[in-house]
Length: 140
Length: 155
Image (cartoon, rainbow over all chains, first blue to last red):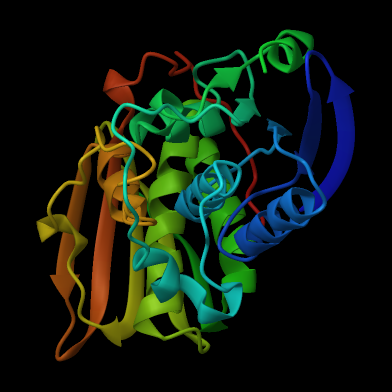
């Protein structure tokens, strides 16, 4: 999987993370690492472009979940701790607060494999999914 | 059931997941599945294979066998391993209403395994080993072609 970074400009500057290739158990941590790098470098809004991802499994969902929390200012465990550490995260909740700094760009086809994974796991209810890049950037 | 297409990996690693996905996709398509139905089988089998390698074999190489066959009105995929017995069919369903802040990381693999296919059956093989079968009914797939196309599948 290739990861490239661009920036879009609407009301705020948005880091656009473009993925090309399958997102699975072999590379999901690379996405988290890039998200962390962007956040540490000052990015506060991120659009993850999944249109070039033919396949995304549950490991990819972990990466999206982690990046979304990261961009809400949450602390994440050291990646070296591995998969079990990701399971062990617990945090306090500000009731009713919606996640607003991470959005996804995906195919407009609801039958698209990535769209189906997002839908079947309910992830698309908590991380907004856009199909138009310009509109997505303007929505931040 | 038709003669199965078979893939045998003696020392499967996470790097083999792409090969397993391609085998399932190409095999299912060759047996008449629509791209969507084949994609659903890929999702389910990939999650199971990932679990076998990551958790069952604790990240070390281990044998995995995959078979794809036509059965009745659908396509059947069988995944066998020598990992400790783990039955995904009995695990509780995750709460999909949990927001990101309280939703546990992970845990969606088994859920995807179950909701992506019409039937999932687990058998333990002796004291160690799992035999999972995934069935996708093509007759109920709205995206199904009327006339499946002949395709060749690389072994």
